[in-house]
Image 1 (spheres, helix red, strand yellow):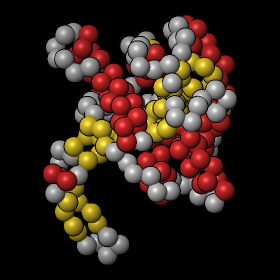
Image 2 (cartoon, one colour):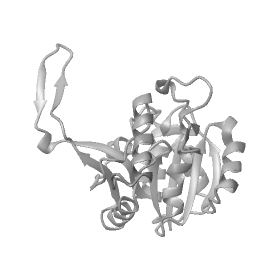
Image 3 (cartoon, one colour):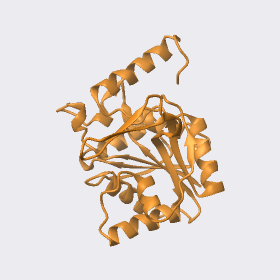
Image 4 (cartoon, helix red, strand yellow):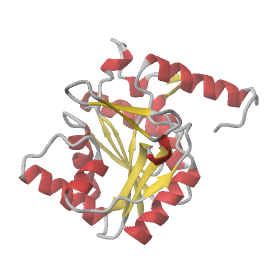
Length: 238
């Protein structure tokens, strides 16, 4: 079984919106999170979906599930104080029906342009290597500054940006999360860092550069522009 875990428990402070969390902002009349979930709903490779949402928005999520006929959503659970806790809450729900070797694809609720090819490559990588981490090549030089303002340039040829999904066997990711809780390590940046900390190898999957995360107002307008371009058939980007 292949299970999409969509976490969307954040409030979106960097979006500078006071009325509604970023994942529920409308683009082309549809909440961003629905744009995201539909990619997994429409993928033949995905069997079930579990969503971690802000607690107060869970009834709204169930309403959206019915409105957009998202039949693969198994349940919606409360998110946590950060992404790590939100993912763990969803894994607890998944543990009710998943087998050890089932594939879990962990994806940001505000990363709405993930394509089916990336989804399938993640699943294939987990079955072959035990993990699949979506990346895109760095297209600009990267500069590292240390605490003494000393600069070091990284050759972009060897640099990649982490994207999503980040995918693992259910048993591996669930056990790693439980270990992190036991050791009170609750500040991992993402699932890839968590899994690497506990000795798991990470296998990169090259995804599309269009797989942006809608975090800031600029990201919001970029996503809208991409949909506008597709709708007007000006450019094939989605």
